[in-house]
Image (cartoon, rainbow, N blue to C red; front, side, top):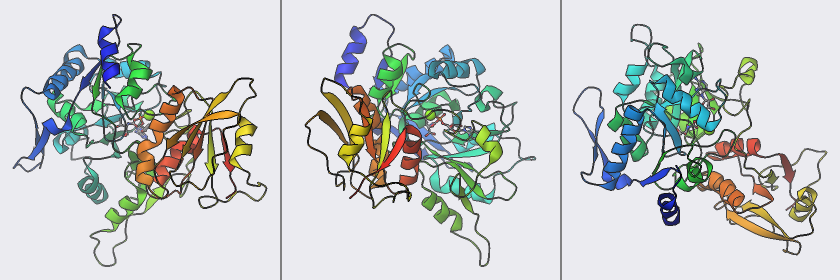
Length: 420
Ligand code: TXA
Ligand code: MG
């Protein structure tokens, strides 16, 4: 980060300030009150405290968005209670106004302050279980929206509002310190891969001064966005609208736990795998359905090895070399080609006779947690390095692999099967 910091401060233009924050300076201690909420303490005199204080002032006094790290991806945050601050999020990202935002809270009390009053709504037992198991963490839940409490610009006029409690200490401390629920989409230009490092945000929104302040909390641990779950339907089932950092397997385990004998477990349905929804397909509220998503400025091609997916009958698998020459535009100069592969891949990298390969390691096979953490970093790093195209190895759709493949299928222009 050092070189980026110095270039920030020697620049005379209005580039963003990058402020370092250390999670080690932040702690949450249990309060002895019925809400069970925790108090946030930040080391007095630390750089982290100064950074969070400055970011808080941007949010509450200046009413402008700031960039914060979360455990999933970096977020572009503004007060969800202030429609004009939220409007700036949409314009900075170039985000369509009909795509609603997630509201981030730091405590249960803050969650309850945003919900319709208890005479008209109370949390279902399934939600209570999910909150107990996964909050703070990468799980977003839909709740009934009360327009008197959350301005309709946040929800894009939907009858529901998406809310999560992030576990990243910097995000949670910023929400607690500003005492403000924060609306925050991923901190990228709409349609681009989500940023998982402060450097990614700097390149996309910081250098040009589209944002004024980036809190740098280091690389995000999860690397893909939160899982979005709708548990508000009449049948009581949980519908996963976007697979993410909390896996479907983990959610199933939690909802099955603690059931009385003979009690039916809540079903967990994954969009596109277990259910389709005509109305939903038309709506941008199905994350990544209506709009282009996760795409770097160069084409991405998804590659399947035989252990992950077998091709449809009409398709004959080919070699990586053939696939590269199929897609790479002809050129008289040597070109750079990005390869995002597993470290113990079954794919053989062809000799570099005509092209130069720039590789990015996605971790070992069957290590979806690592692959998820590295996915967006790989797409953004290779794009930065000036490759013509990116070929990415697909993984099995289990655990975080479901979220990884959900993002890759949207990022990729084409899919090819490679022979063993
Ligand atoms: O991990 C995350 O969720 C990150 C970090 C910053 O918290 N945020 C994030 O926000 O990914 P964004 O805006 O990039 O994606 C939020 C997705 C959108 O695709 C949106 O369609 C969906 O959540 N969403 C928001 N409100 C919704 C609602 N009321 N109903 C259905 N989907 C909703
Ligand atoms: Mg996003």
